[in-house]
Image (tube, rainbow, N blue to C red; front, top):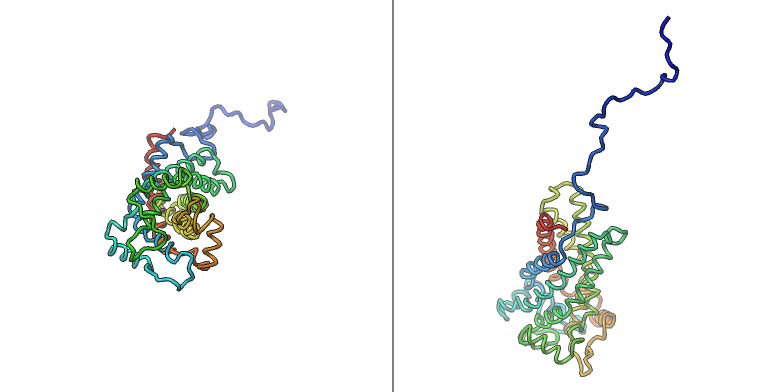
Length: 339
């Protein structure tokens, strides 16, 4: 007769005598970050990288900014066909400015432009980086809201530099002059003249047009750049660390910015360049909405898209260059200076 088997041992799973490799949960190689958020940089370094990236782009695109300003001021508050057109397109305008004002004329306002780019984009990009690190941009709509808030802050702080830049870029010899001519002798003279004539508040005249302009542009630029970069990374067409990912994302971003920003850009240029009366009030427009209505009524809806060609030709390469430089420099910095 066989040996009796304890009923308690029937159907009992076998005891593992040792721990297999598969039974050990894998350990993370690096400390996890909530939501895989980007790493942070020292804020002054983050500010500097954003400033340098956009200043580098500004040097190459400033001639297009000069032409864009002239086209946007041409025929101000005049019906289409009722004024002489000095500037008839991007290439013709570049040739005309270069022939009349010389090569230096194509870089008018460059110093003020560099100051504006350094202040506005240093603040804007570093603030946006903070929203990504803190997780604010992860909530629904957070990307767009963060970009808009970053743009509004940067535009407000850098508004005096944009004011002077617009004045200087609008200045031309009488034969090709458009818009009001402020006749500043240079960037220092412009700041001193505006302060002496209008006080501190005068340096921020036109900011009510600049803030919505940069809010819209910044929201479109940063939101599309971040989303497009994630998409190109996910497709694995390029190496995740390749600069081509940033380049392709910046190209998508440049198109989005040019389309959404042009009407706001026209209004901003008009508000900044208008003359003021004895009460320090604008002679042409009282504010953003007044400018929008007057331009639409006298110049038609297409008046809000004046300078669309140079806006696109300037914003697209500027976005590509600035976003590419910023992303590449920031990735290098994160390898050695991440917090």
